[in-house]
Length: 462
Ligand code: GLC
Image (cartoon, rainbow, N blue to C red; front, side):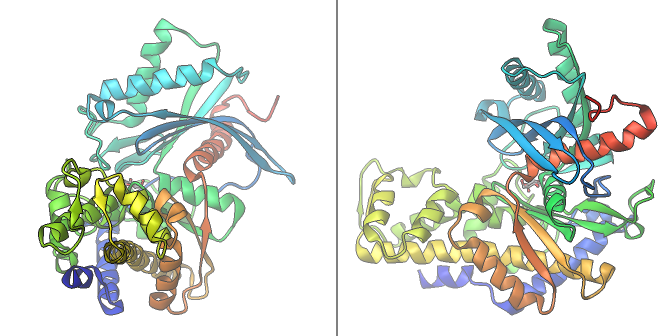
């Protein structure tokens, strides 16, 4: 038990070393020559600005990035009383669809879309779509992006290397032939959830320059000077562009995380569909947190150090613990009756000492995840401070179930950013629904820009 807790502990010195390595990988990712081998992917997104309050009209937002697909109808009202209203529906993505073929996945998304639209009376001539697609993809334009690899348990075949917008349009065309709609759907923008978070938070706070997700997966996007983005072939007139760092891939190609990975982290990676990839993600995010705890519990059981009483059909010996379980245990610290109820569902009978050990383990796992994120936040904030000046005010929009629902994660993260970041002027802003609101806002900004050039019917003229 003691050696496990020790292996999960990260000192400030270790975290600062990690931050240094992350910074090197950020620079390598931004440089054209080294980008391919870099662990921070630093993907240009073609999102160059945040909304200016003149966004108006009705938009559809799609959000795919975990076990659910969400569709939102977002109404933006411009001007002094600017406001956003949303009407949304969640559709489940089964394990079968996640791991089937790409065509099955996209036909399912379009099926959900038709269900959503048929339940609502929508009058727009043109319904612009903002699509939050939260997987690593390489943008060739704001509405054109190529899937680089799957993460978070998805393996749908035939999609890596393909243009996501094109696949969605093809699936919409297939469906329209069977059941036509009386208005046009147009994909205006595709983006990562972190990018949607920057934009959504930017709508409320002008100092927003970072967007972080800690949920099923973890990642960061931030505003970078275009002159520093060597990879970008065609620069736009704006001075900055949002970069999707894909920090989950940190640790993939070098030894950066080797010294702090535990045998449990290695086991999780080796038994995942994307083995050897997204090592940082697997040490932090909600998708793996419960499994990490479970593996440690199983080890302690085999050592005779925890849970002497185990039901013969106990579920602890196969995957099934969630990040929510870790959150509950941290939350029930000192309430052993509640903890006993939680573990009973897995066929475990807990003594007071077991409860105490469980709390210590959950706290250590949570703290490690929060501290690793803190090292990342400080690295990115330092880079922005170099670009914008040391006194720059930096707001970071944050979303994701771990950040929002875990009882201590946010506090641990904030205080470690203060410890490691010295004078950096960073403010955290919890941004619920970056993926929905953000997607609609990016689509709206894009409509505004394209109205000038291509005369897409103006959503404001009703
Ligand atoms: C994974 C994805 C990344 C996404 C993050 C949060 O790390 O690769 O694109 O932003 O999860 O959803």
